[in-house]
Length: 137
Image (cartoon, rainbow, N blue to C red):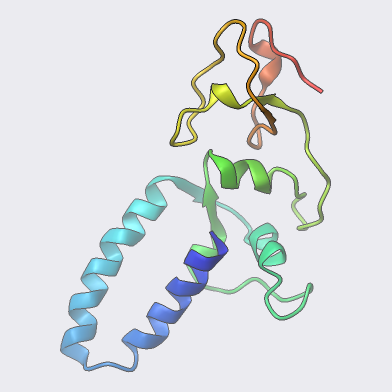
């Protein structure tokens, strides 16, 4: 995810260096991609992702660009981010659930009985205790 955010930063710089007509056409395409990104992300302080990116130094301020202030709602990146507190400090996994509860796109789909899949950490805000047969810890 960090690579995508850095590429988005570079796109902004590149648009400022090319002829205006071309920049306007490319901006339309970028806006469409931006909307898709907004569709699967939620607002965030940006502290965790900036800390993970370790931009130049661990105490680097969060960039002002909006895309640094959004994180995925679910999926592998959301799970990874759940290992960090709001200040960007690593705090480790909060709990574990079975990987089979996530489909290929990373959406929660539940668990098949008898499934012995790899255990992973749930996304932030996920409550596994309400699921019959769940095994936290």
